[in-house]
Image 1 (spheres, rainbow, N blue to C red):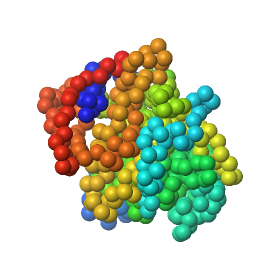
Image 2 (image 1 turned 90 degrees about the vertical axis):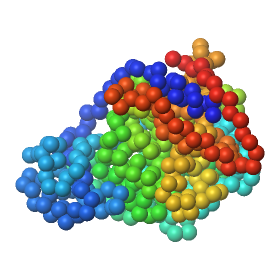
Image 3 (image 1 turned 180 degrees about the vertical axis):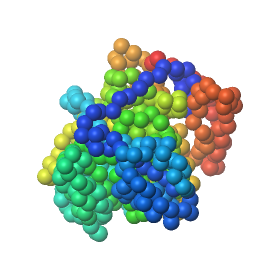
Image 4 (image 1 turned 135 degrees about the vertical axis):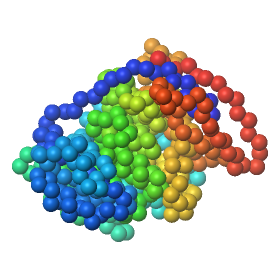
Amino acid sequence: MRTWIFTVAYSLATTVVGQQEDKPDEAAVRFAKSYIVEYAAGTIGKRSSLASTDGVKVIKNFDSDVFNGASVETADLNLDGLLSLPDVVGVWPNSPVYLEPSAPVDASLQAASSVVHSVTGVGKLHEEGIFGKGVKVGVVDTGIWYDHDALGGGFGEGFKVAGGYDFVGDQYWPSIGYEREPDSDPLDLLGHGTHVAGIVAGKADDFAGVAPEATLYAYKVMSRQGSTDAATLIESFLKAYDDGVDIITSSIGGSSGWAEEAWAVVASRLVEQGVVVTISAANSGSQGAFYSSSGSSGKNVLAIASADAPSVDAVRASSFTSWGLLNDLSVKPDVTAPGGSIYSTYLDNGWTTMSGTSMSCPYVAGVAALYIGAFGGRSVHGKGFALALHKQIIASARPLGYHDSWYSDLFAPVPQVGNGLVDAVKLLRSNTTLDFKPIALNDTRYFSRYHDITVKNGGSEDVTYHLSAQDAYG
């Protein structure tokens, strides 16, 4: 409880503003005249009107109760022009989204998975026989090299990687001159998604992912290039939802500090439907505050920061982890997990060490899988489950140290690590729950001095809370 109170105190004190720029490349050129359009509810028949509009080419229709719309290309209409069309209620640029460059690996910070799991409490849950059995985790990434022994050695029903889809093919899309070539085989060609998959659910004699008995679904959104677009990410998220996954995790991001960006909106809506969503917070810590990434900016999405955990007694925020807040001063990231120098699966039955929020993000997805494996997910508890678990993962986190040794006596601040390090034991064993809305400065005419926090005790004994503030860097 003390940690959460500190979240409020620090977020209210932060005032610095920054901006992030897109990377100029072929993906940016390709999607310069590309947009995502949302139709009004119940107006699916109006698609023919959009498709017949001069100068507008419909690339992909989205047929979903979560998002009813399309991706389009047009050189004749801008955002306002598209928004003026009949029954169009929302329009966004179809922005390029990039595979976040891995942070440098520091060999001195590398630790075995057993040490990392000790830091987060995952190891204790494994000792109790909690492994995430039966939970479906969708990995939206570069695919999965599913022939890896630690990832089940195959693809399809009966294997650890039981399903998925390739939305892009095996060539060089979105480079100019190449087109998407979707098929049913999400085999990884870059290695990033395979590393992520091992963190979630890998299993070997001397290695265990967070939820080694979970089932994986691979959604490949990048081919041989480390980029894609928001429309493909939306398509993949909706496909994962239709496939019945309990959790979606994606270690991908673009430049955006707004919760209203199209991919972030869809991700948040999926949480409202009961799907837990984790997205990496990015690796741009050197850029300073207000450097949030797309997708993870969604208000219901768990934005995951990174920590270094070389030993149980030396856990600190990673220097590379990106800082929030969002551009409207909303609190992001939400929570932190080990992401520095993480060992996991790789292409061709290999293993490698990588660093980044790309590694911490699937770790929290694995923790969510342990919880769902023990208590059930949306199929048991209904649509409100994911948002409730979202709050509990945040509330059960614990503070961790700032990365700079000159300030070793200070905790890492909320805009860097959210509410702190994920605590799997506390998440699964706590008898109290918190119901709250994130509290930000909101220095506008909508400012409110008072906020409600509801504490529910589901145990048989009284619980007493002592509230205090904690000093942190900044």
